[in-house]
Length: 137
Image 1 (cartoon, rainbow, N blue to C red):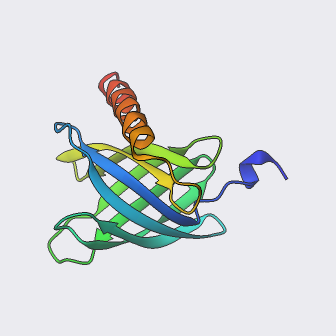
Image 2: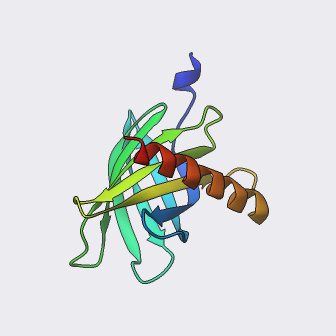
């Protein structure tokens, strides 16, 4: 079995998302269920947005899913991300319609925990890298 077949998104993840114009992290938790490249799961945003359902696909290293909130009146959010080689971190971009976008980073929370300083430092580097990449497109 090749390395690309040994990766899975199934499990518990913690993460932060960032709006393109705001330098502030918004925390969320996600649980992914994966079967034959299809992904389902649930999200809990830290704050007033609450719970959401996710559905999408995963084929290492690419993860693509749509987050639909349980609350009425909230638009779906489309996520596109890339998993690191070790399978413990995914980073990418999110978009709501054509009006709102940003970046995100998630890390496995069912593995060994990163300490808070490591997570904040990694997020800062990730946001700068993703923001630079998005600006150059």
